[in-house]
Image (cartoon, rainbow over all chains, first blue to last red; front, side, top):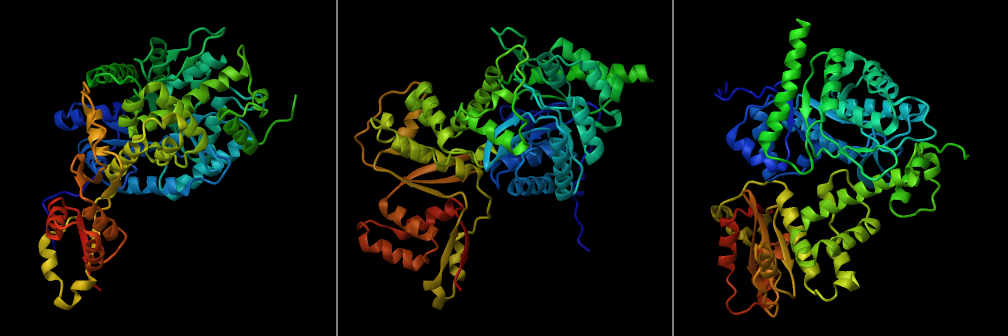
Amino acid sequence: MPVTNQPAFQAKPVPAQAGIGLRSPHYRQVLDEHPPVAWFEVHSENFFCAGGELPRILDSVRRDYPLSLHGVGLSLGTSDRLNEQHLARLKRLIGRVEPALVSEHLCWGAVGERHLNDLLPLPYTEEALELMVTRVQAAQEYLGRGILLENVSTYLTYTHSTIPEWQFLALLAERSGCGVLLDVNNIYVNAVNHGYDPHAYIRAIPAHSVGEMHLAGFTRKQGLPVPLLIDTHSRPVAEDVWALYREALAHCGPVPTLIEWDQDIPAFEVLLAEAAKAETLLHEHRALAA
Amino acid sequence: MSTAPSLPELQRAFTRWVLGDQQVPLPQWVAGNGLASEIRLGIYRNTIFNNLTAALHTAYPAVLKLVGEDFFEGAAARYIREQPSRSGNLQDYGAAFPALLAQMPEAAGLAYLADVARLEWARQEAWLAADADALGPETLAAVPEDRQTALRLQLHPGLRLVASAHPVLAIWEFCQQDKPDHLQLDQAGQRVLLWRDNSQVAMRGITADWYGLLTLLLAGESLAGATQTTLLNASPDFDLGACLRMLFAAGLVTGCRWD
């Protein structure tokens, strides 16, 4: 019987603590310095490549930290067929790195063989809901695991939408069996952009379905007659969003919470400080609940 | 008020609108809420163009340096309209950008530009290509005497070749300088071999003979056949042994068969 000193790899569960979205400017530092971070999330597509340095980097990260894969390009809400090649690449990556969490977005991004490579808003209609339920189920079946779906920030609503966004998300989770990745910043951005009540939004999401939360910073578009926030992931988390996060924790209980920063990416220490803030609120919540 | 679009109608109209066809009846399906629908949609158009342009920036940093931000953005915008992204992974976007640069009349003054772009796309492909274990030169000793002529070498999936009538490698290196000095453009054309060397993409200029030989090997030609063809036009100093030693030393021979 072959004996090996190497224990088999065990996927580490993502804890209900603050994690950080790992982006290329910080790969080297994380591998070299092994900073104290509870878990990392990466964009799945960045590691779709067949070989080379990137897969090796991810292998190192997942050996040392719990890992979550967050997709940005599957376009679950396309009215065309699902892109099987994309799903196959995702499945291969999942098989290789065994992430504790896998997530995608409630949006569309491609039609007619053309990808727009953005998270585009769906109309919230029965037609779109039915499509999304089918798609999420198909993806979960193909991948052989559950996924989390994230609410996206939007800059428009459609005149023919008939279902409030929060209800659409809740119904999608209920009917498809997927979990919710509640992006608290996106709720805030949409509340400002579309006049939603962010508190009612949070209360409408079934607490048990929320498997992760996201926090990020937005910018304000200047020179318009109405307030419009853009989800740039280029700033610290806003005070109002921290307050909303507190409410979300009270509603859902403590869940893994990610700090995302994708443009004008600062020193890693800035992300650590944002994660520490989230950790403080998670801790406060636990103390209150105890 | 028109009837509500189906989801396929809406998504196709959205795509056409952001790509510049302002005749499609999309804005009427967008709630204004205090803003013109076109402004709301315009945010998406900007993000889409910015994301795809950023992908081209990542793949073509030397081209960006040669032409500057404004020209690059114009070329990128034209490319985005003409060449749809076919993948949800932005690393796949930009393969035909060199061809567009070659056709652009505005770039005609920079005859080498498209070739520098081809070199950069080859770098991107080499960087992302599959891994393969390297064979050592001793592999050749294992080939039976009577199968020598059938020997085929499999080269690393990340190996790429670029040939140009311009000194592309020298131009690319020039672009890496912080304070670019001056560039000698009246040099001979260059043929470049690219491969992945641990955490970087390695490049070296190679002779026309090596380029010819490697092109044939990549096409699946036997080593004997490729050598024979190369020798027909080779310069007197063509050294097959040196070429093979270099391939093995760089870990670029990853398989061989003689069936």
